[in-house]
Image 1 (cartoon, rainbow, N blue to C red):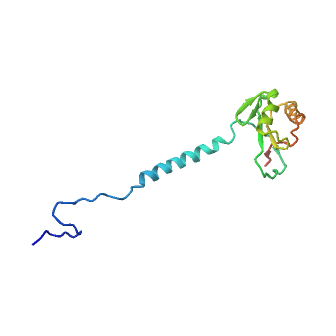
Image 2 (image 1 turned 60 degrees about the horizontal axis):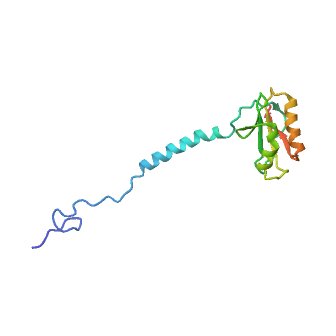
Image 3 (image 1 turned 30 degrees about the horizontal axis):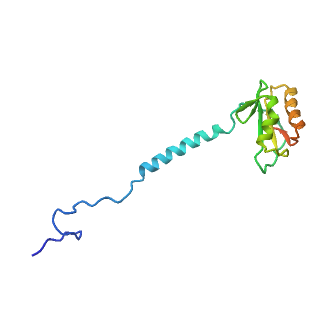
Length: 144
């Protein structure tokens, strides 16, 4: 008689008893992806505004936005920030010109702290207007 045939269609008794497993275990991959998702969900809100400014309250409605404007922040000490970078008043026009690629019609929002001297805010806005930036607006929190 010949060699015995097993139920799996293989001949012989000890040959190819164990076949390689061809399945991928995705559980560790899913675990890593969930951890990354949680990390990004926690850190994303922290990346939006780096300068703490106590904005005044106003009754005005928000302006419609078609493009993202440039935001300039002025803290309670009068320091000027573009994004998270502190700059001096004499550097403001050169930095704005470089960022806007010499487009003077770019919208600029000024976030001034409520404890800040009004004259300092007007000095900064006047410097921008003198350089040709005419679309300058003040940002305030919505009044309850």
